[in-house]
Image 1 (spheres, rainbow, N blue to C red):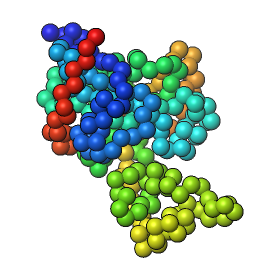
Image 2 (image 1 turned 180 degrees about the vertical axis):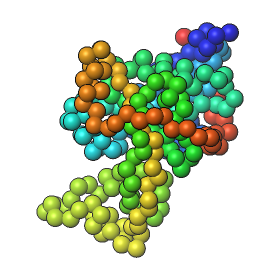
Image 3 (image 1 turned 45 degrees about the horizontal axis):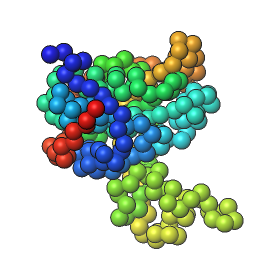
Length: 236
């Protein structure tokens, strides 16, 4: 049976598949989600989840295309499937999810080097590779290690009532200086995908400030995804 006949991709509400984000993905948290899709087998049982949302990297959204497409920018921020699926199931899932998104759209996604990922699914679906993310030190707060650093910073707003303090100072005031520390952010392989007309894609490529590079290679190491969410069957 071909991949097209064996699997289906369906738009779903995040609440329906939240276990996949909280327990099956290594990040163990639900990201910002604008669009969510499920990969279904021949029995209409969920065997994968893919989500897209507003990128956390605000500077990337602002600068990657010389100020353009800021309102049409999404990040593929979660891709989770059961183990031991057909060889092309993951790339089929990503390709069908991308086709379901409104146009035009710029999509960015990352392969985490700290998890020994290279982004082979993005390579199989013809994304543009633009190298590693920049070296960066994140501020974290003890007890909130489960949150992304951008989410931690957002807990205190932008400044005090007089506009004098920066976020780091506000974090120290709220949680105590001894509880605020820095960690090196793992560098990630960065990929882009363009959705739109031929002219849209041509302009996106022209405006993209990053140089297209050869795909990275290496041995992938899969994280522990053995958690089995409650079986979810979709009735059409």
